Image (cartoon, rainbow, N blue to C red; front, top):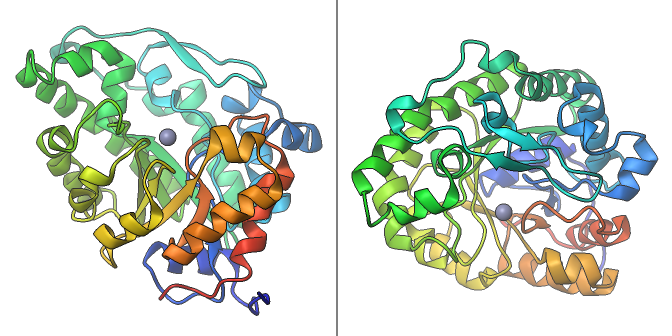
Length: 342
Ligand SMILES: [Zn+2]
């Protein structure tokens, strides 16, 4: 297949693709981390420092455009920034290991308080400063994507995964109250990132296919997600891992402009359910294809997603840092052969 003529700026292409709009060629860019050890070596910005140091964060995240040729830059690599600022204990990990929480913070929704200096904590401040640096350097040309955790992920982090999941049945009222108490965290951090200059905001809410049913999504998150898309007035991406086909019809009605989805969902089936109501991003498998496959294997999967009409080709989720850059670049090669969807 021949390459399509490329004339749009990455930012213009990415933003248009967010709304299933006209593009010169298929967009590429991830709302989750694409940072690798190779990129750390090339930029001199390494994990774990890049999780909390704005300059390193900006430098490493810009590799998505500078080294990989993606259409967006997303500087928030982990999922622990807000929880850290709320007082959770976070182990920031190593070059290979992503951060993880070591202790939850709250037992009751009534205990949830947002510290006055929430936006000035080391990690939250780093994200905001990194966005400002990136906006200044790339803002006219490359799309800058911010990221917040939704109330479900925040509940996992400050109350515990087990508590959250157990109380879907045991005490749904308490879970509802926890989610309500955590909504302002998402809103406050989202608004601060909008002010710092992002073009697009990604909301990660890990009501993951394997742990949470479509029915639970409807009961606890559907209305809250609708509310968040109305309060945070930027183009928005929702990210949920796992097999989410059973909730995609709901997700398409939330007001999110794009859904970042897992390879566990067949791209054609996802398109069938979503249609033009919401754009799609992602779908390329991390643990097998990107980590252990060849560039040709990646091309094959990217090609499948492109044929299905996935608007933004991308890895399915934050990639393991051992993934080779040549595999991540293979996605761009496929995108260049495909005209837009719209
Ligand atoms: Zn994920």
